[in-house]
Image 1 (cartoon, rainbow, N blue to C red):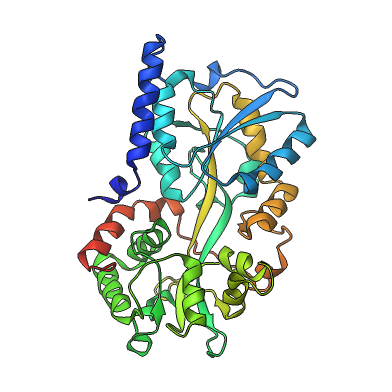
Image 2 (image 1 turned 30 degrees about the horizontal axis):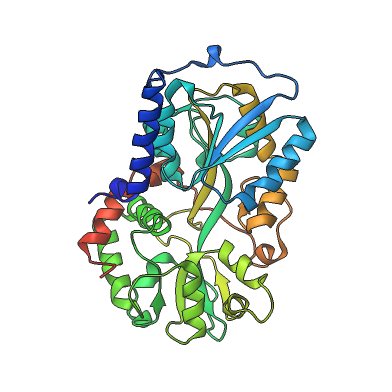
Length: 364
């Protein structure tokens, strides 16, 4: 089974089939034909924009409310848990979607590869977002960063760390991590392939597996839980979960897990410029966007100082724009130096990464 197949669900396929059948019955056949930028409706004062997003409502709604308050543009939001691409294909030219927002570079590239996005040009976006965190052709843009870091037992003296160190014998039986097939980890493994090559990455992954304290499973927060429980000493997980745990209700389980760990940001030892691996939340303009200019306006708002700060404080993700005020917990991790390898280059190795996880039996 390939990684691409893993990201599809039966529910998504059933939904797409049902939607296509409905459109057909109404005399509205789905179409793969495109609408070029010149045919898109011009922006209207105020007006509306339709957002399709896989993100949680509680996270994005405050941003959208702020955008409407500032511009007078109404945002009609459709929250899509699964099957975003299938839905867009089924809707075809009649899709009301203007902006597509999701997490993981691979998910954005899947939309681009399927012809479901369109390129835009925006000096505002280009100035706010570093080049390696957006598509060179303007097909997608990162909006926030999710750094893949090391959770460390508070009692362990450890100042610096390289991802390569996870395979060192000194960590045998001391490492916790979630499934290697989770997109967070396939992205990290893909980055290792991009830096070190496939053969070296396979050797590294076999070493990491040999060091696991338990089966690769659960979620990122379970890494902190198991450090508190004495099962492991270190683990790989996303930084924003630490913000969530440390800001959880005092006395709650999650608060205790968060208080049991400290954060170290690893780098790639073999990379000349170093830097921590990040994945993203990001967005693109839909191929058939009826309100294309309002879609661009929304993307530009989402990289404003105000929106970036709201974004960072709502979910503890790192702002994509430099100089934005951070949440105090995130700020306590220190400056984030991002691996400069282009995200598009990392995403090209996702399938190799997924196949490698199976080949070494990482999740078994």
